[in-house]
Structures are given as structure tokens and as C-alpha cells.
Length: 574
Image (cartoon, rainbow, N blue to C red; front, side):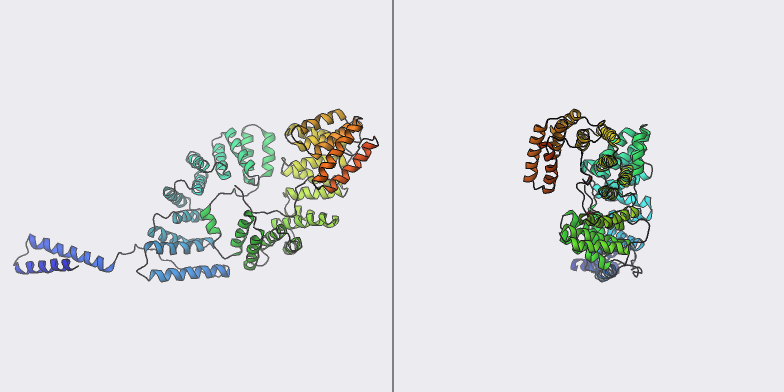
């Protein structure tokens, strides 16, 4: 600074000696002004860019934990705004973090200036245009959302979530040609991403390339069968191909359920709040890590923060019961399921109530409480009519209780909801046999074998029925043996062995039937299948007395062999 001051003094001397203002004087005067301005800049430091005003909204409708978070972050922002030594990057972070809390708590209008200020102060930080894009999208401002996503993509060109969200925006605006390269880039980043395949399927539908649409959407559903919203565009694709028989089942299976988008920044926002919903999401992440104890802790915290008797509260109680069951505390789990039932509305659709009744129904059936099991499972399908697993469990319970026609009704309802359901199609055959409609059961299984030749369940059921049906017109030991032997080439199991022994006995080859039956009983004993061994022993005694089997399978055999009282719902898988 000293040399600037000397220059100023020198100029003052020179100008004072001149009697008139000449060009030299003007130049010196301008030089004085320039040097003075530089001195002021150095003395005062760099000025912050103009920022938008930010104030807290009315937080009274937010959870107490959220109110505390917002006030603490606002206080931190106020303190830093009054401190001239705080860097632009640090101030940007404080603005952005306040915006995140406000956006997560659904105070969109107040979050917007926070993000805009953060973006002004740190223009290369991808978070702020990304969160702005989501905010604008939720407000329905498509133009601003698109511009913000494009800015985020300029900063991070390979970001999977940004590619997918922007592609969806382009599709929604009727621009499939602009959307396609975005989804293609996303799929190149992560080849098994369901959301990217779904996007390409929708692009193909928009272009009326129905073959490509069906291919992409079928692949997406194979990766994630829970992506039920994809059934509608897939039905459109099959109708466009003229394959109406394939279109109709997909139309029935449609549900308005979002396709999961891998989105780390979005998940950071979801998990930010001290709220019931945030702790539910934390618990779901613990489910993904199979940490049942941690999941239970998160769900308990969520219950403490959630409002009384809301859908979120019921969901948290059910998920807590699920975590407790998976950690081995079935009694405590049952208490949580009972709490959901107590809080459930008298009628209407309620997913948590349906799942709680389902869980209680399966637990009651395991205890031999048949009437209670049927009552809970009936309530499950009342609260969620499209709940395939509940229809199947109810059908099994009814069939084991001898109510074959009612069981058949629920198996067929499960097929109506999901025509691909193997347990429902297999259960239909078992119910028909229970109704002594052996020919109908045989025809049904033959149709399923033709439809799904690679599914051994239908072939084995057909072999057992042909070998042991009480109806002489249906039995055919040689065909039964041929079917069982074909399955045996691919799968060597006790189920296949039982079918082969049945067929041998029907053909009069009792010695071979006895040998096979003893072999499979030995294998079952080694595997610890005590109940199965006792059942197999009954058929062994028949073969030893040179009598064929006339019961294809016991009426109480379940078709949902992997059935569980709980489902770790909410967990999304790539």
C-alpha cells in the first residue's frame, strides 16, 4: 500500500503546480481514482454476490425433531452470514443443508432460495442443481426442472439418477427421441437397472416399436417382479403386437407403484430428517444389510416420532414385527402384528393391516389354530384384494381344512391377479383332486406343462396324479414313469423318487418301487426331514404288501413351500 500512497502524493504535487487542467492532469486524476479503488478493494476484502433472502416457514405442522433440525440450521446460517471471514464454499454448504431439511420436510418454497444461494456461492457443486431439479419437478415446474437436471448433468455427465430422471421428463413431454440416449447411457452405466430398461420400454411404446417395448419391459419385470406399474405399458405393447391373450393378464396386474431409481443423493435427502418416515427408511436399509436388530431400533424410534394411528404408524409397527420375527423373537413380533390389527381402520384398503393379518394367519396355522388362521387370512385379502400371497395362504388353509371349493376360488383369484404364479396354478390342481375332479386336474396340469415346460413342479404333479389317481380312467403308470424319468435327468430329489416309486407300483413292479422308496427315505432321514419320512413310510408299507398308491398327495400338503409369516417389505433390490 505504501507505494500506492506515494503515487497519489506525487500526482497531487503535479496537479497543484499546473494553472490549467491539461491532458496530463486528467490522466493523473484517473490514475488516482483507479489506485484508490484498488486500495478500497484490498482494505474491504472480496464482496459476496447478491443473495436471496431466506426465512423459516411456520414449522408447527412438522415433527418436533424436524422443527429442531430446521431451527438449528437456520441459526447456523444466521451466524455465518454475519461473519465476513466465512468462505463462499462454507456459506454455500450452510444454505444447502438448510434447504435439504426444508425440502425433506415439504417446505418447497422456502427451500428454493436456499438452493439458489448455495448454487450461486458454489456453482460447481452438483448437489444444488440436482436438489433444485427435484424440487421443481415436485412443484410441476417442468421447464425449470429440466434446466436444473441438465446443469447437474453438465457437472456430472455419468450420474445414473440424473440420466433417468431427465429421461423421464423428456418422455413426459412427448420427446422420446431426446429421452432414448439418456436411458441408453444409464443402462451402459448399470446394465441391470430396471428403471433404465423401463424407460427404454416406454420410449419404444411411444415410437410404436412394440416388439422392442415388450423385450425391454419383460426384462425389467424379470429383474424386479414388484415393478407392477410396468404391466400397463407391457399390455399396450402386446396389444400393439396383436397378442391380446398376453396383454389382458398384464392389464390386471398393473398397480401404481414407482419403479426404483438408484439415487444416492435422493436417499441422503430421504434419510435426513428426525421423523417417523426417515427412521422407517433407515430400518429398510438395515433390512437390506440383514441387520434385524438395527432395523428394530430404527422402527422403534420411528414409532416414537410418528403421529398416533396414521398409515405410517401402522407400517412401522408391522415392520418392527417383521424385524423381531427375523431376529428370533416371534412372541414380540406377534404383539406388533396385533397392534397393527388394533389400529387398523374398519374397512377400506390398508396395506399394513393386510400384511399384519397375513402374518398372524400364518403364525396361527403353524400353531394348529385353523379357525383363527382362516379368519386372519380372510381379513388380509379384504384389506388388500390383490394380495397374491394372502390368497395363496388362505387357499392352502381352506384346502387343509377340507373346504376344497373355497380353496379353489382363492387359487383362481391368485391366478387372475398374477397368471404367472406357479403356486396358484399348482394349488388349482390340488384343489381339483380334493374335489375328486381327477380328469379336470389332469387336463389342467397337461396345459401347465405345455405352457411352462421347464417348470418341474407341474411335471411332478402330473406324474403323481397319473400314477396314483383313484379314477381308473385317469391313471397311466407308463406315462407317469416317463415324465418322472425325464425330470430325474435334470433334478435328483426325493420328490422325483416318490413319483417314480408310485409309477413303478402302478405298473406292478413292486420290488423296484420298494427299492426306490427306501432309498429316498434314507436320503430324507439324512436331511432331517422327519415328517416327510413318516409320510413316505406309509407308501413303503403299501408297496411291501404289493399294493399301489391311490393318493397322489396328502390334502394338507402346502403349495407355498417357502411361505413365511413375515415379509421384509419395502426393501428394493437392484
